[in-house]
Image 1 (spheres, rainbow, N blue to C red):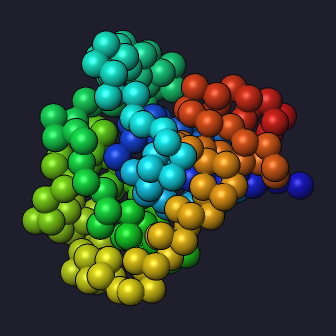
Image 2: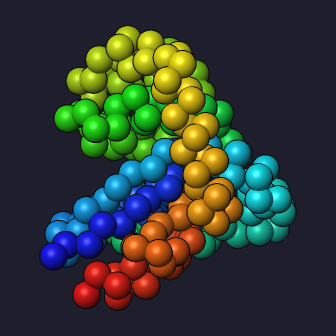
Length: 195
């Protein structure tokens, strides 16, 4: 029986990008299911009293210039430090909620993640978002319009609140059953649980 990995994520986190890429590799290798849970990283930080590691200048520099590139090389995935970082991902995460369960969800996730963390695009700019989604053969107007739907907005908030209630304090956070794994640098433990 294949296992399910619940993946709490926000596009604005480079570590969530790396976790997403590694999870896709593990899915291919082990046949597990990835259950995507879009949340607002800022909401997790605020509710838990946590903060981004890049707020500590030396740690942020180390992460972005040494640590994350090492993991990208280990996973054999591309990673570019986005010159527009940090990006306001509110509408992008609403888009994830709106597309979740649709047959084009995977295409949306890949397009947005690659735009931010491979191509270095400013995905805080709505015109850039529209171009990226259109280039990925997605209905940009439909997705962007859906980000303003009250139900979509409410779902993203409730997802974030549910994540906090479950013990999440940042992203990426993953669960296999009741076992929580925080950070893309814990992927070896995810793999061990899948074996």
